[in-house]
Image 1: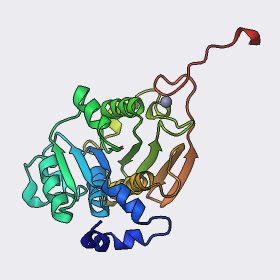
Image 2 (image 1 turned 135 degrees about the vertical axis):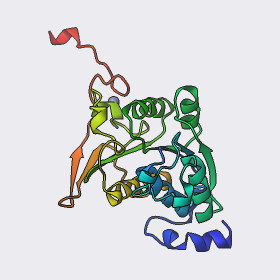
Image 3 (image 1 turned 45 degrees about the vertical axis):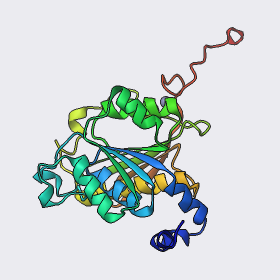
Image 4 (image 1 turned 120 degrees about the horizontal axis):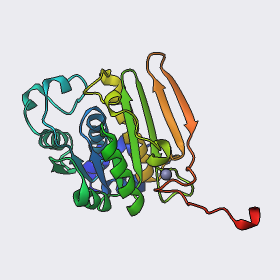
Length: 257
Ligand SMILES: [Zn+2]
């Protein structure tokens, strides 16, 4: 690590439990950020600023005026530009040392598989359950940690899944049935900008913790925020027996009957 990197990340390196080795681990990491809306905005800004070496950023949309209230990666001058392209410029301006690979598409199929496989960690910042489920399956197959968040109105939730951790649940354990998509999208409903920014920041915290081996990841716990009262609730999240993705489908032993 050269002198400018030492200076740039000096406040992070000084953290208890986070030394030069932790910073080096971040510099050598590649994080896939899927979705560059409100969550992906704050998460990717903090990851680039914090010294993650490579970011692969994916979103098919272009910047619209109604995005600017919460998607802090973008400026008025970015209207009409692909989010992945505008985000690359913003992140490179913040930290030229961070290598950015923009993917101006909705990840699916083999492209999604490949993007997950060549990453060290994945951030789920999307607004649709179909992509969330595909990410979950790919992350489980390739044993990549997945940090998942959602925000709507004045509420938000956050958790992490990790196939490398004993008994980690997966996204499918949380949602056995697909929730109503129409009631769960920021573009269809209201959301307070700082709420979604807060959840994106929390995703960046979890990603940095997992990559640098600091603290205790949120694996097996679901954090839920009600911003109207600023109450945070933490729920235990267990692996669901019989989950098609992560569960062991145990056949009942005949000796029991
Ligand atoms: Zn599961």
